Image 1 (tube, helix red, strand yellow):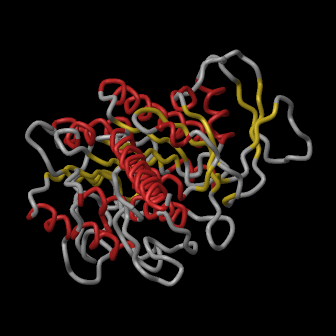
Image 2 (cartoon, helix red, strand yellow):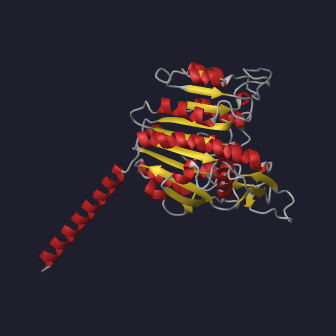
Amino acid sequence: MRHLIILFLLFFSFVCVADQSSLINSKASDAPLNVILMIGDGMGRVQRDAATRFYLHQPAKLVMDRLPIQTQIKTDSLDGVTDSAASATAFATGIKTHNHVIGLDKEGKPRKNLTELAKEKFMSVGLVTTTQIAHATPAAFVAHVKHRKQMTTIAEQLSASDVDVLLGGGENDFLPKRESGRYEKPGHRNDARNLINTFKQKSFVYVSNKVELEKVDETKVNKLIGLFADKGMDVPHSPNLKLMTEKALAILSKNKNGFFLMAEGGQIDWAAHQNNAKQAMENTYHFDLAVGLARTFVEDNPNTLLIVTADHETGGMRVDEDEIETLKNAVEFIDKQGKSFYVSWSTKGHTGVPVPLSAMGKGAEYFSSVNDNTHVFSVIRDLWGFK
């Protein structure tokens, strides 16, 4: 009898190991070759709904609202209502931190981010934004600093990183004081370093306007930096987010090991901080045009995971059918059906409401329930085979 029990235990152990191996193999088969993470900064549910109503004939929906997975994520930081730095750090590293902090945990220790993990897999990496490329959201995918305002330090860390494509604003974070580049205002750097030259020495092609970006031959270019303003890009954005995303995808997708791309519609947040409803809706709609491009890429490359979400909601945006007398800042708009709707705001700051998350492609099913924003990192890390 004793021998039978031992044999049974050995057999049971073998089955458990086999099942575990099968589970790991199953997860490996779910791994996407490419990951596209698109972040509409400040874009809550109402920003999406208002842009739909203003730009489309309902019941038409924005592209992001037509992706097969639709859920929400929670956004709080260690300080309560989050800022972009803490939220982007949650996306990029999977940990909660304090507001203003980039890539560091609550004890101030650097945490490995998705860019660093991607590079361990020999993938290409791109960061695209309509704000400064050293701004909080893109910064969290490369940098490790105590405060998001350390933008010249972030620019230095970007120049030392292995990122392959950088497109956005913020030229003066890369230039020394008293030196102007292709835009009027001089740089911010105190160390006399011209980091644009550093990128060129690393075989990057440098572009600074829409025409130059359009002329980039992605079949010949593997490293690209585009800085299209002194600070954040002017509205309307030129080049727009769709074109920047298109060029980034064309370059990054040449890598047989795959790529990671973070593309941010960064000025939805800026418009909402100003309670500028028209610009908030316009920026949301143009962000969605870039999402449409990404969706087409996924349809053509089904081994790609596309995630569309926001770091937080800004402004407490509200849409009503009738003018609300108590909301003095309500502004009237006319929708595509010719009907009036009214947009108002409860604050000029961030709010703590959950924000939408939409997804499609390889591994999208892992986003089918409501989770914390750190879940974005956890899913991508696990799909890539890291533990």
